[in-house]
Each structure stands twice: as C-alpha cells, then as structure tokens.
Image (tube, rainbow, N blue to C red; front, side, top):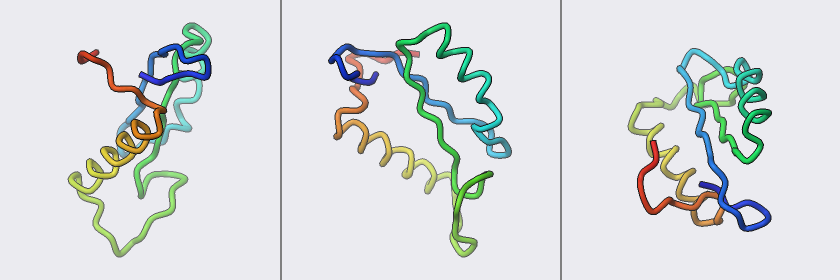
Length: 91
C-alpha cells in the first residue's frame, strides 16, 4: 500500500519480471492498468545486469543478493512512508 498525497491509501503493484525481460517492454500493460485503475501505483525495477542497467562485471548477483536489495528497497520506502504495510496479507 502507498500513502498518497491526500493521505488516502492506494493499491500498489510491484512489477518484478523475468530476468531476461525489461520493464520497458511492458509499458503497454502498465498503461492499461493505470487507465482502468487510476488509484493504483506501480513500482517497476530492473535488476543489475538486465537491460538499461549499470552493473559491475566483477560482482556476483546471486538470488540472495537480489533478495537483500529488494528487501532494502521496501524497507526504505516503508521508512519514508511511501509504502505502508497492510495489517493483513493481500495477494
């Protein structure tokens, strides 16, 4: 959940795609979602090594590392009150 400018709670879609794709390839899907559901917020990101990213060729981007990276991002967004943790799980 994201706290909007007007302090209302909005739904959030976190868009994590296949490693061999890029979120840029899915812009049309995102546009359709936002047209039908204007109160939704969408978080899209590419992992290091995917298209349009800068990364170190000397670093190993393991699943554990990528999981820590996503967890840190969610923690930061929660701390900054950009994402509000729901009181119950929503799937």
